[in-house]
Length: 325
Image (cartoon, rainbow, N blue to C red; front, side, top):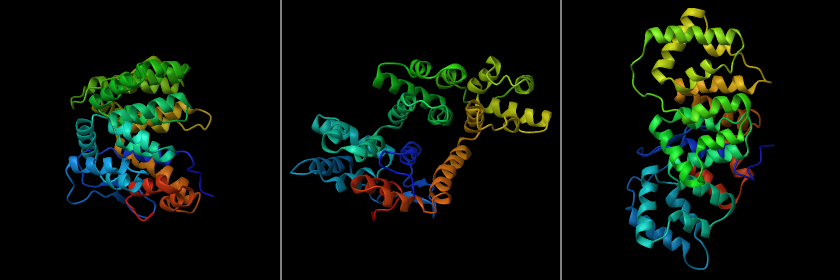
């Protein structure tokens, strides 16, 4: 039987977190049966027109949830941002506040997450991951490693504004031991974004990594410093030298151990930092295809339709690019 969607599951959260595109007319979403897309109209109404329709959806005897879906589920991040700004300017109220007042439950959660700015969404998801902290949760790693330095800074700023605490402070509060030692510098780093690398440094740090991994000193200060602070280009150079010098990729030496989530976290950071596109593709395939198709023998769309209902289902199906829910 497919996993329950009675509360927003990893699928919907992953969907909302990863559909983070500001300028494309369509957003690609991995699907079991095909590569579905979020459909944006060829001619998009002006933000003022969308705001007028949303305002009408909120008025009267009942909320017009289908109108909300027809607009917000079919706009890019930049278009949603323009709608929020225009709505606040026109009506003197934040769109998110109006949505909170008019809708509820899982549908409310999905719409609010989708409508948030990417940095605000990441901040909220990071907070939820910390409040329900589990070492197998990769949300913090995905946020820290798939965002560039400026984007991660924006997430930290959004987190501080929303929760009146720093992200680093909450990571330190909710994690312990080696995970605290790893995740605090990871979320607080500001990696250099340039392409310049030092071959000498790559060689010396590859040697350092190999020594610590051989010693099984996986939480050594130097190992953590290298993988959490070095630029993407420098880290790639270091790992390339590691493979050339020691005969195998570093992740092969960080052998999977079902009882060691810390090792899994190290591997995820390395994959996610060096090639975020491939990492996210792998996560999507594992979470969506394996969990919802191979294990349950049903496509994701079918699972959503069969295990959710009402407006929440309609919203998720719209985000998958199908409006026939």
